[in-house]
Length: 150
Length: 189
Image (cartoon, rainbow over all chains, first blue to last red; front, side):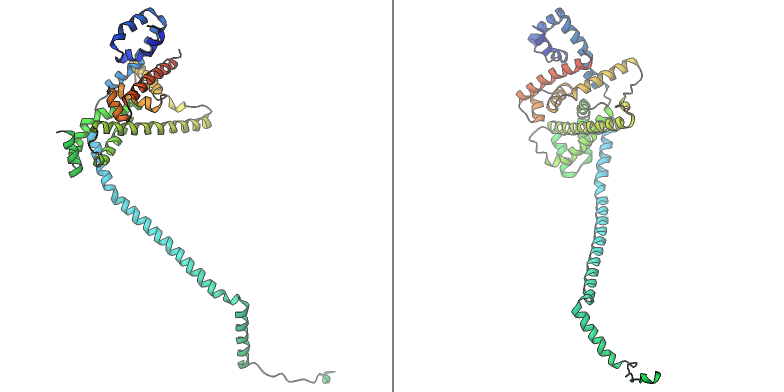
C-alpha cells in the first residue's frame, strides 16, 4: 500500500468501515511510514470524539412531557389567533370608515364649492340685485342745487 | 405496540399518549442525529423538540411508503441544516457587529470549557470536529453524520437523502477525504 491509498482509508480504518482485506496492508504501511503514522495519531482522538459525544448523551426524562405541553399550547393558540383576527378586523373597519368619511366629505365640499364657478356666481349676484328692490333703505336721492353753496 | 398502530391512534384519535410513546422510542435517535450538526446537547434537544412537533403535524400525510424512522430522519436532517444555516448567519452578523464595536472579531465566541483537563480536551476536540464537519458540503455532511452518528447502512442513508446507494458511497468517500484534510489543517499540519 502507498501513502495515497493509506490516507484515503485512514478515517475508514478509524471508524471500522475499511475493507477487511485491506486492514493488514494498511497497518503494515502505517508501521513503516512515519508520516502516515503521525497523521493517524493526530486524527484518531478527534475523529473518535464522535463516540465520546454519543457516550455523553443522557436522555432527558421530561422530554416527551415537554413536547406534549408544547403541542397543547399550540392547540390552544388558534383562540389567540381568532382574537388577533378580530382585532385586525376592527382596526380595518375603523380605517375603512375614516376613508369613507373622507371621501364623502371631499364630495360634499366639492359640491359646495360650485360657488366658485363664474356662471353660478352671476346667477346668485343677479338674485341678490333683485332683492335690493325690497330694500327698505333704498330711496331716491333728490337732486340738490349745488349753486346755492357757492 | 408497533409504530403503525401508534401512528394510527395519533391520526384517528389525536391520542397524545400514543404520540408520547413514539417520542420516547425515537428520542435518542433524533437528539443524537441533531447533535451531529450542532455543538451542544442543549441545542440538539431544542432542535429535537421542533422535529417531534413537526412530526406530529405531518403524521396525517405519512403514507407508510417508507419506514417511520426514515421519515423522522428526514425531518431531523432538514431542521438541523436550517438551524446551522441560521446560526451561520447570526455568527456572521455578530462578527460584523463586534468588528465595528471593538475592532476585533469573535471576542464573544470564546468557548467556556467545563472544569477538568480531560473535559477541556474533549471540548476542544469536539469543537475542531464540528468546525470541520460544518465546512463540508451539506450532502457530504448529512451522509457522514448519518453514517457516523447513527451507523446507518448506505441503503438507509440513500432512503433518507432520496439519492442512490452509489451516490451515498461517493458522498461518503469525498466527505471522509475532505474531513481528513480539514482536521489536519485544523491541527496546523
